[in-house]
Image 1 (tube, one colour):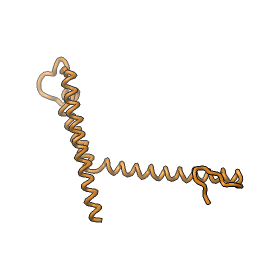
Image 2: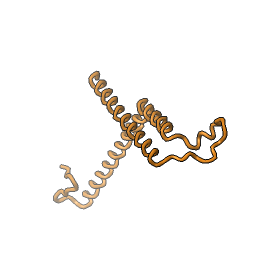
Image 3: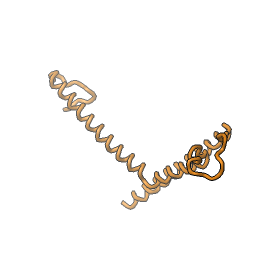
Image 4: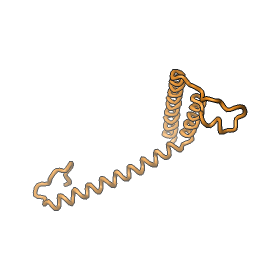
Amino acid sequence: MTPKNGQRIKGESLTRQVARAEQQIIARRLRISQRARALHQRVREKLSSPVSLLVAGGLGFVAERLLGSRGARGSRGASGPAPSAPAQVSYRKLFTRATRLFLLARSLMMAYRAATANQAEGSGAAG
């Protein structure tokens, strides 16, 4: 009979209790390590899925278009004179762009979740 939650067995020696506690700690650490490895693998698979990469690329593209690339345009060798002062963006305009970007990201993530849910249902029915 194995006690739960550190309960003590009547008449058990202190040495045996310590040894049992050590074994429980070792077993718990092993389970945690296994779960961490499994979680790491699942996260890696999810992040490297084509849908995730497409969403990340799309968000990067949209963010660049909405917020604009400040320093990279000058280094691309654009024709024409360099601007004398950086373009001033009002906080209101910046907030509007950020809000649109957030809403777009939210919509893309909702579509991603719906697509993965449909994909899971389809593979569950087939298997």
